[in-house]
Image 1 (cartoon, each protein chain N blue to C red):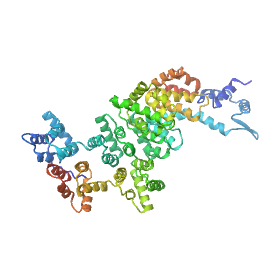
Image 2 (image 1 turned 90 degrees about the vertical axis):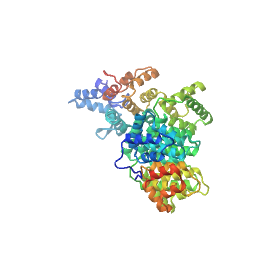
Image 3 (image 1 turned 60 degrees about the horizontal axis):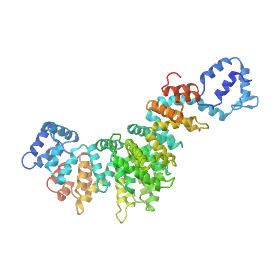
Image 4 (image 1 turned 135 degrees about the horizontal axis):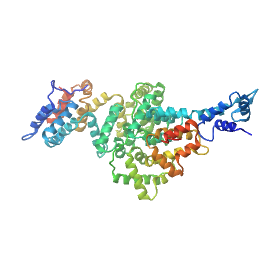
Length: 313
Length: 317
């Protein structure tokens, strides 16, 4: 469930556009007013605000926002404004054009969406960037990462519930053979992980756990952090237990030293209108504090206020 | 001395000398030989391919009956293919590759000549029919060196807009050339760059690559790929589908053509009739110096022939 809270009744798009305009005018920016509007509107409403603002004031809302605010706050608002499909296309492109492809973003987008949701992202990606998502992933990622990311992004997976138990047993064995040999980049691991339906994959991992008394993600833990294995584990988690995956990502960001604002922004912004509520609840049981408390501890200023508004309290 | 009817009946029931069966001729002979059991009996005695003496009767040979069944049912087969939803058609053909050992070239044909949305529709139809994704079945059933190429091709959802980056196309033409030079003759399929370029780039971009390849290296990419049938076919399907389909048709009519090659005729005529039949007719004439409609008229029979000519857009057979 979403954590996004929208006032009832919600002001019209024109009223909202006026409020934003007022927030931009004069010295400095009234960030609180910006957050009060933007962080409390759903995707359709935000789109209407953009249109209303442009019609009224003859300038693009996004361009104005970019010139008014900066830093982590600006990046968060920028990503938030778009609807979920366009947002993911934009974030995928940013991840790809990074010096080194930001693989967690691609894995999340490729693995959490249903086949049709991912397809919608790809269509928007094509219209924005005049390339297919697959071709950009393939041409920017290299080696084993290319194999994995391309396979995850490219497959139009079957979403049905049927399970073939014999096949699950066989493929659990195939996974075990590859893992015991340390061949984490094996074609078979990638094939199974990227092409099988969610139901079939879950059945396969259950067979694996039954046979070896160890979950597959634990089996893939290595003493020395190996980026590719980290990617494999992320893909496995995203495909089977996404809520747990995101909860863990948040806990890592908020409870360890150092701070990855981009990752924090990504998780909050991408889930506030989707399933942040479940992630939040799980976080609270695991971290012994609320997500709001954890975010407040590690962030500050407008950035913090914006995130807290999205997390909902 | 064989009568005209005996010769015609022999031709009609021999199962070679062309595809399909001359139904109208058979019907007229049935009419002519009504109440003339001796005529039929003497035909049975003389036509050893279909009949052999067994006790007091001339029994029908099972092998030959199966052959005949195929020829008689070509019209049936092509009609059903024609009336089916194009996505179901393609999905069934794809499934025959993954589950009935049909040739992988059919997957390449579907993946490379259908527009992106159509290929997507085929994948959806495949899921509806078989409760698996096409990608997972191809990846699972085909595990040899062709696998990467085939999985990549069927997974593709290519950009179809007009924008092409000429610099990238040039460098990828060079990359292809390097890959071909350094790989062994049969190992080009293993090269990640080759597979990446062919399975992800837009068709306009690929055509630019082919153009630069010739300009930079003096040879057509097809010439350098001649050692690998599947790669060659992939390039041909992108570069000139009309030429590719003409080849498939020609293979069906060749002397000694196998059953699968003959089926290719129906597949191409049905799947391309509404798409690029005019271009195929032109290409066929250029490649083989003969009008496609004439070749069809000569080498096929009966309702099958008439349906092919209709699909080819020829109004008076």
